[in-house]
Length: 165
Length: 285
Image 1: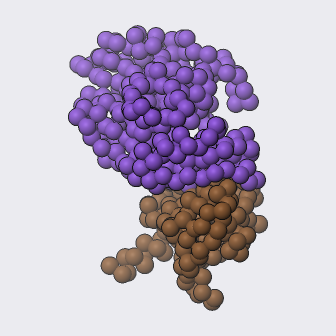
Image 2: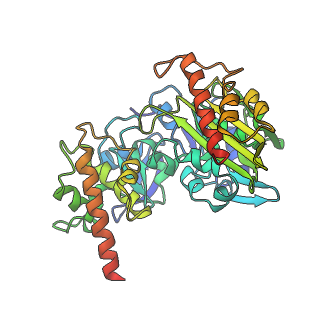
Image 3: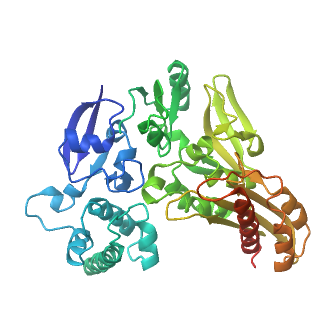
């Protein structure tokens, strides 16, 4: 066992893990963060995407020990740091309003990847959105509304940034 | 799916890493970004006794200049390569190919050196390193040695790296001024591996092609240079006709495989078409 100290969604955790424990299993089974899901288990589908030090990664392809000393944000930490009744993150809100989901299984990963894209490129074109979330698969093939949701979120995020300036 | 148990070492320097590799027993795997190794371990296609994780070896990250060369640390992530101004200025071919590697999340973790050391024939970066005449700096128990790209890729998933050794950096000659570059990749769906791809660097002079360097992805167990096309292009007119004629020999000397994505003769056809496109774009046509 190896001991790790990780911040997840704003809270600090100290745990002993086997080196072979995948980050997604640590989050779900040891911390109960089941908002992050396991989809394909082969690094293709992106359903397990979380942010590691602010960058989107596939948590089925990172070892829990590699998150030692790092900061992890899951889908559960987006809305007001996870506080109950907190307002949704603008990207969550856009997925809700534009109905950017059908069964919803890919949604946590889609949202985490979309935030990473918008952090890097605040006003992506439709093509840039489709390329930006190419690491996330929606098996309902609900991509049209997912792209619309990211477009709406981009507008809202850049609008609010402009308002603050 | 969970990997088989292993002992885990997390060195912070190259010297510590070499020691951890030496101490790791019979079957040691070096973990760079883990985007190929962890999936393989999950599937239990690999079950190493010891994993040496380079994640915290900071001296292996980053791109710097050293005289006429760019020096790319083996642990520089694909995402960092993409945004590096020195790569953009002197080796845009690397950025073009890196942009096509897997997807956003994988590029955040996957590394330049890891992809080269893995040496997948369908990987995009080996043929780029070969086309650019890169050199591989390898650290081992007895010091460092430098291996040219032409000798680094030995066979399918096999490189010149010996047991106990570690790829530390890749030296890429700076090409600027009259050099143009283009990576042309053909794949089936988003984030898929190359069925075939072509990396081209072309130096133009007075309306002619002075020199062309062409690397082929997935046209054999290792990346290859399209030597016959390079020879035909040396001194040729920089015209669509001359390039098309030269590109017809792009598959000479290759040995592509047949698989679910395409038969060998289809890959030979793709190599010709993609070579024509890549060289034309690199020549500014």
